[in-house]
Image 1: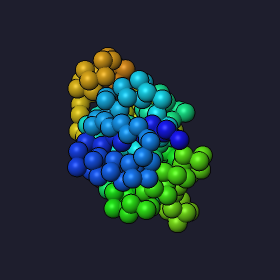
Image 2: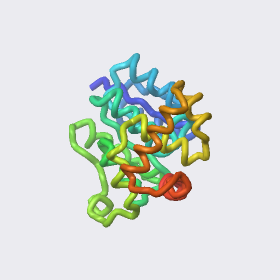
Image 3: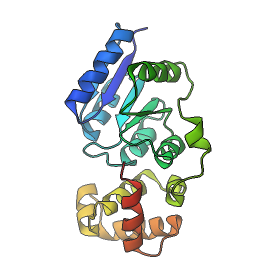
Image 4: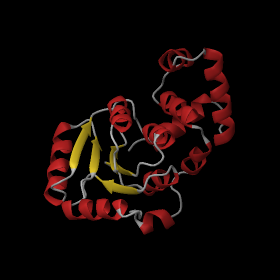
Length: 206
């Protein structure tokens, strides 16, 4: 089949290596590439992508904010998360946010191809051991309660951004940001912003 596969990663060498692996197995596939969240969203809007390989950490998509945005805007597109970390909490969070599969950046070519074949057939590709393990962070489970906008603000706070900066970047008012922060603290059962930053930075070390 003439699949359209999108590789979203800010490292051109990794994108090219992954594209080479895919082209050997899917010679008729249209292999698209993007380097940040904005270009990924643009590609998804312009093309009928059959599967997205998404790097968790690239410009505009630090941690899980990009995945949450893409699942919200393009729920029909299967997403395979690609990460430099294979921590159980990372895999569990990717699954809970709607990803169809998870690959470590150290995965062998045969494993990558098996994963993509599996997801393209409508199944999921996750380590059963990781999904069944105890969650390494209680915060990871609670993040599923956040809206895409709240998750984005959560990531920005984790990066040390102030409410004023967040309001400017998201083109919303500062009181709106404060309202979101209050809701985030309540949903995550955290005391204050300092605790949020500490817990968030521990979680997004992907």
